[in-house]
Length: 142
View 1 (cartoon, rainbow, N blue to C red):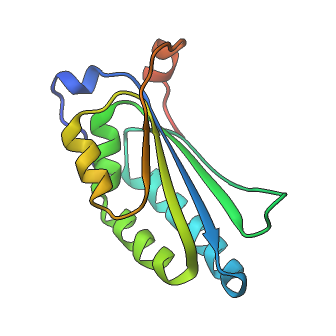
View 2 (cartoon, rainbow, N blue to C red):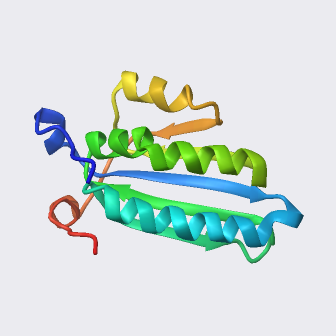
C-alpha cells in the first residue's frame, strides 16, 4: 500500500480528480482492459482513494471518464506518484487520442505544478462550498 504522510495536509478535505479520455477507434478493447487492470491495481495499492469510477459517454463512443475521490491532498499526490499511474499514462499515450484532468478541491501550488508536469491539459476548480466532508473522510474503499 502507498501510505500518505501523516502531517497537517493529511487532515485536508477530499479532492476529486476527473480524467476525460478519448480512445483510438481500433484500441477500444485494449483500453477497457487497461482501465480494468489499472483500477484493480490502484484499489490494492492506495489507501487514500475513497471512490473510483470509469464510465463511457454514450453520446461519444470513444469517450470515457474516470472519477476518483481522494481523502486529501497527500492521497492525490500518492496516486499521481504511483508507478501504476506511470504505466497507465504510458499505455494511454499509445492507445488513446487525448486525456485531460479536472481537479476539484483545494491543493497546493507545488502539487498543481507536479500534476501539470505530467503533460496533459489540467483545469483546477477550487472548492468554495462543500458538504458531507466528514462522511467522505471516514469512508473506507473496499
